[in-house]
Image 1 (cartoon, rainbow, N blue to C red):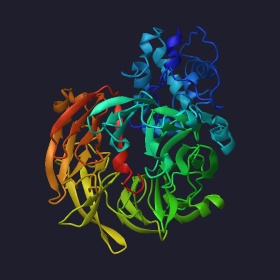
Image 2 (image 1 turned 180 degrees about the vertical axis):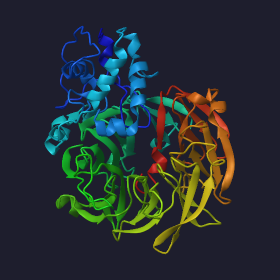
Image 3 (image 1 turned 45 degrees about the vertical axis):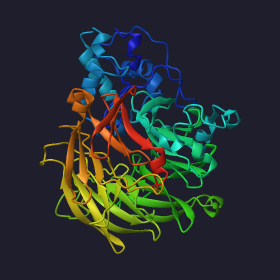
Length: 584
């Protein structure tokens, strides 16, 4: 028998690495995809249940969170292009049947003792394979405008900080950790290592940016959830000022250096959306492009998902730089005063960069855009056609608008925020780890091109899983001296509780850290990710994803403190540090 608890039946489905539920207490978004679910009925579904009965099961039990047409609402979208490319049917079946600890999604057998439950789950999975009408997968400029909401008028905000003591810390000391499963951001004091409070976000809080500190927007944070909701938050009071939904499945956010414009990249629909500092939507740019194999790409055959987006300044003009995921293009969008007057034109469109573009970072000047191409192993490599494509690191010269380098980066490189590494012995290096290989690749500039300089193994081949994030600290004048060390995580099993510290002068492993031991946790619940230096470079913050805490270390790897009170923290963002790095 179906019971009301089944309303969370498929809550945890998503295309992310791990699955997680959404809050039952959060208010539903005000958009056209959210339709109140039909009243729950006690319905028996036999092994010969009709398609109609299975569709009714979805609408009654799942539509309230995931949208009646599976486009997402409080929970993620459940489109087959997302769901079945990220996991196997066996994994999906297991999640429905057994639920997921730490989320509201219950095990199926706790809400139904029907002997046909396995068959019902199988039929539900088959239903989730069916396509959703393309016209329902759109989100227009008018759709976005209709969702704009003023939550707290700026005129009501305090003139000085009230959420933290300005006598003890500055805004640059704030560290923000995304709480992946709670729809919140945890704000930490990067000087005294304390939890200051929480800020509401939306589904799978994903990426944040801060307003430029030398503008009135410097007190604000901009956060995007994977459900497309963009928030403007006052970091003096931790109050949300405004919010707007700019897509159905979003990933990246960037802010111009003058604080005037914010842009978001969307997976669904494939678009780049530009809003002003009041979150008023100004332009939606569809991501039509031709991939390196000459095919028009995207989930609907014409649009590519939009992935990394960073801001930079070229010849005094603000620019957004965008990676088109399947298309393998990099766009440079003019967001200067003149560019805004012309409707934010794409001034450079660089193709053939790689297959499946993902994360990116800039060099110190903001001219060279390092972008990870994670590859398509059903096709020949762009580096060596005799091999299958397992990915590469590419570099685009944003000023001249051309591809200057494609280099090995391990299997599925993933720089996260990336690492620009200033050394005495080697000059300036650029580094990325990889998801599929436990190593770090270092690159060096040679004229207007770049080349692989050295690869540093993170343990023996196959001994550890791959990585997601790498960070370095090159010093900030008046704030802190450069660190000798580069930090990189191990984000996948085996041994996802390890962190590695690399000596930047020797380019050898300096120390291996066991975060499970330091946190007093079982290694199975101590996945440690996203090391982030504080603004003065004196400490490194590390998120323990399933461990529900943040660890604080000295740059050479000595534990300083375990900060409790965060739930499923992942990405950590240092306000003061990122204000001095191009693009992030």
